[in-house]
Length: 134
Image (cartoon, rainbow, N blue to C red; front, side, top):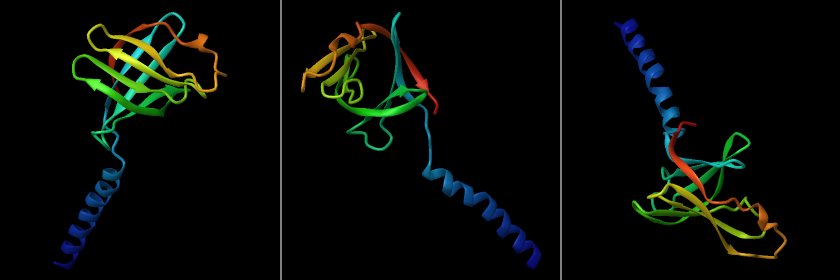
């Protein structure tokens, strides 16, 4: 009888202990966009898992998704606008995605100190919706 209880406790510990640690680090698939043209390729990921009212936006840089900013505006079925704090150092820059035409374009919000070369702003490009597993 005692051996049976010990066996049940061991099974419970083995089964329930990993569940607690897995619950803290859940990586659900996230929706995003894969946008490219002949010169550029961008992959964006939108994470609403922590805060539905203030989603975070990530861009793949050097093989990893890096937090680049917040979602600024969205209209369901129409458009999405988000900031990119890494594209330029002193210029406030944002991306716009037209959900109807699947076109990604860019917006300069303010020039800042004027030290950035604005020639590297990509032309509008076509995107595909993608599910990222990371």
